[in-house]
Image 1 (spheres, rainbow, N blue to C red):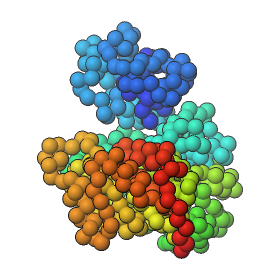
Image 2: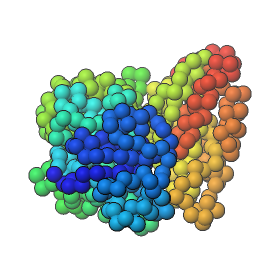
Image 3: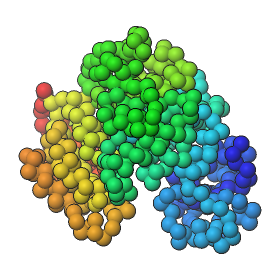
Image 4: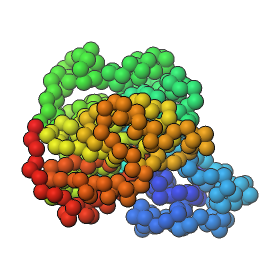
Length: 471
């Protein structure tokens, strides 16, 4: 047992990952408390499970006998609870460090990648649970069929989403690890660009246990280069490459949902059916199947959980349907994620007009990847862009690029697009122009989902009758 501390306090305990490790430590018999800025369903659940919850953050929240404080990366040094811990000499650890310590006591499965890691992690957990195993898990979003973003299981399996930002995944030493893909992102942190990112992923790959398994996307040349740099011989998966250990012998789509026949190590593993659209999710499924196979799950036990998996929150999530209009919300905030999500949408909603409300996330990301963003909306009919969601940006970043710059680049690519600074501007624009048969997709890692929710509340009264177009 790596946790000798007996009383542990969490700052930001309602966070996606924080709530999971708080519950795990409470299950181990630790005395756990936590604070958050507002009451949520998560904080109420934690309270019902016996964890003492404080709403608001204050030095008085830290009990006299607390011997460890855990904080999210977002917590600032001047937070009153951080200041109090320092005054009293109480050790403070980041969430990622504590996550790694918990994994050390279990059989860890860690899923990494620039895109697809949340969905893949959720698929792995869904398959394991469906097969009768009961893993501990922390996913980067709530998952309906899992009952939330984290869970405390009875097995020694621990499935986590491994984030590359701040090199958080360097705290993990998994028995089984996935590298879905490696691309330029978080360039405000990785100032050395792609070479630095490759080195960071290679360090993560090196930390897979000597008797463990590294599973790598054989369709991603950079991910394969990472494995070589780490000196690892990976088990590969691929949609098209028949030389990969896990690959599709055949694959076809019906209404945007895929079926594929799997070959594993040269042997037929049967047919699988997807419950979420998009070819990119077939790739995610191959990685999840490989992880579940490592954990000892038979192929026949994987089929139903995979078919019944309907995704994580904000991943092609249906907000509502009515009056001939469908509203979707998606977390995509990187050019590759946007492109793949819209490719899936175009196939799934064949013949329908697709509106995208894209909220750029970070000025720095927008500036570094401006031209990539501009070309990533080819499968959208009309794109509406509000002001950039501000987070972790410097004044220089904020002055260097705006949403109007993105609109100019998109216009140069031939895309119909409009800069509408506020959500109210966008909602007014949509209400006057939506018609039966339209699809509205809100995209971004900020609070753009509020647009879809608002439009949905008024959709019945603002849609003009229009005969639905067909492909």
